[in-house]
Image 1 (cartoon, rainbow, N blue to C red):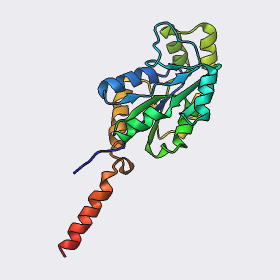
Image 2 (image 1 turned 60 degrees about the horizontal axis):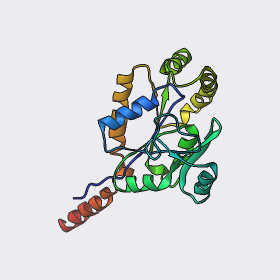
Image 3 (image 1 turned 180 degrees about the vertical axis):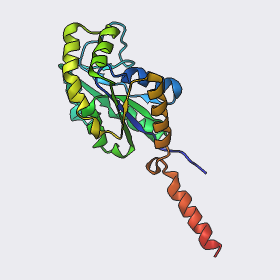
Image 4 (image 1 turned 60 degrees about the vertical axis):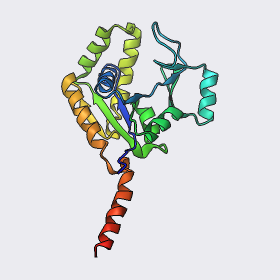
Length: 214
């Protein structure tokens, strides 16, 4: 019996500093078969970032051409730059039964849920335990200037206000506990009927067997 399942599009969203990047890494360490959707962006690479590994770095014109050609599963304009998820690698992965992990905002999540692949999405939103703690995490990671942190904090409520558009919502007050809950959610959703295309033929076989035995 071929019990090959369809892959999931696992969407993980949160305001900056709520832990989605750390939890994304932990999920891939837990299950290396989970593919990470490498986003395309028009921003310039940061120190140490590798094209095709961290992001696909595109010019604004090249990015717009991809959108026009239908090559982006989702795209958005964030902090003055375009970001998007190339469609081709995602479609290939889920057809092979591999899950694809997306570290994107609510706009991208909404576009994917409304796409042709929407039936195979699992969307999870991470809330911080408090706004004060969110600000503290942004400061201690040391990646952004005070001005950028202020902008991220201003945007955080806009992100949080869309929490009710997700399948699951978790308060990330303890990283290990949140990781355990994420794994439980993913394992259960992999068994969802829509992810098991082989079930239809199996039920047909059961029906034939039942009819033959009468």
